[in-house]
Image (cartoon, rainbow, N blue to C red; front, side):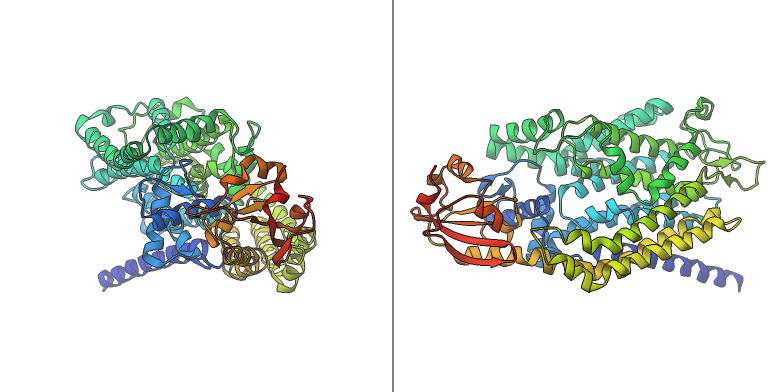
Amino acid sequence: MAGPRARAHRHLVWVLSGLWLLLICWLAFFQGLGSLGLMDKTEALFVEVGHQMLERGDWVTPWWNGQRFFDYPVWGYWMVALSFRLFGVSEWAARLPVALAASGVVLAGFGLMLAWSPPQEPGRPRLLRAALAAGILATTPGWVGWGRTSTTDMFLASAITLALFGFLLVHRHPAHPWLAPLGRTAMALFAGIAVLAKGPVGLLLPGLVLVVFLALTGGWRPWLRWRPLLAMVALFLGVILPWYAAAAVANGSDFLGGFLGFSNLKRFTSVLYDHPGPPWFYLPWLVLLLLPWSLFLPGAIVDLRFWDSRRRREGPGETAGPAGAGGLGSRDGSLGLFLLLWLALIVAFFSAAATKLPGYILPALPAGSLLVALFWRPLPGADAGLTAGDAGRPVRPRRSGARIAATAEVLLLAAMAVAAALAPVWVAGDPAYPAFGSALQRSGLPLLLALCLGITALALLVTVLRPGAAGWLWVPSLAGFLTVLAVVIPPLGPLLDRERQLPLRQMARLAHAEARPGEPLFIVGTKRYSLLFYGEPEASFVSDRLHIAQLGLHRQAPSGAASLSPTVRLLGDRRALEGLALPDQGIELLGRRGELTLWRVPRRHLQP
């Protein structure tokens, strides 16, 4: 009877693990995915390129606003266009590929933690560690935010992560009959996808991590066997060459100069699109994107004791003993070092770049999440975070500064609860959306969020003060974040859409419906790229009358128009339009939604 009962128990545990993964991925990435209109400006631009790819039937050359667009390679556009073809054009379909990519990394992180655990470890702690790793990654604000926003950042981050996961799989099981081939395939395949998603940086970043790690651990020899290496190179080239060759043939020097020169080299060496930043720009962003888990990251790094050279005394081919004797060079102990290098090198690389945006360090978040997971549930036999005992004795996590970090989180959550309650007052001052503050207040969501944060802070404080509960300080944080995802985010999306995004869609459709033959559309002030997705596919974005004149009014007839119209349409915030100082005579008000205003004016009024 013990046998069938044990098997039934194991099946139940696996079923519960599967349900856990489905729950956290649904709450983090899929729930209400299409309830909010496309966000300006990056998401709207990215999705419109995929939309145009489907509309034009051109799967080689990206187009946006009537021009070829080589800021990024084609992978993300392919995913959006394919989703539109399968499910129709909608916000949900536009974001489905990134939600799947984010979820794939969460599931792969769960599997990696299981694969890295020693075979003699009981099933329950293995599953708890893997489930915690998945839960932490699925509740980091950065992974959730970009996992619900259709931009190229998540495609790059997920591909780099899966490629590095593949390396870890091979490093842990170099002779396994199917895990080792799976890991090598993942390395080559997802490195190729990363290059298709954002260019050479997709190979450079994981390559940098691997080179430094292998140099420190002396583990080069297994990776220099020519047959598996040749197969990986062939798969990598097979992924990237077809499109790069086709794009170069179809577009020639425009592609090579625009993509390789402008979008890659110049982005690293020069400030583009007015996105500068100091060298330490990413440090506060790393804290914010990993909250609340980033508060425990210093302790996780300290527990690695990576500075102790004696901990690298064993080579990469050694296997740590059951009592935790393995050094950082061993397969068991090297995971912490690898994750630390992954995190630090990616942040350092983008810190050295001239152009800086928060989403650039998204590929570092999985490494930080797994480090924190190992901080709470270390691997038996791993050097990081353990106090070794005699053979056969369990090892005890140190968890340096866990209570101090948890106390800081309590204070942070209390401050966030106060800020949430006051949010309607702060947003009421936005001149573009003057009614949003009162609508937010009437919804009750600020108080609901404040309540969730306050209860989480109280539960965490009780856990901090309870003797012997240091190992469970992660529970209130994880439960609190999932509660916010479950009860606050679902009604917040439709509210934001109704108050902020719906007027944009209405005005885009009105502008398209009011268009006369050959009549151009100028979008004044804020660059709301979503107007192209919801309205007509071409417009000019301007800031003032001089800018309109510089663009050349004679070139602004929409594509395919037989002749120019004597009038133009101007769309923007009321204050931006009034700032053009146009004569009142001849201005025709076509519509208004909130502060958004649509005018038709004679072309002669816009001449310099």
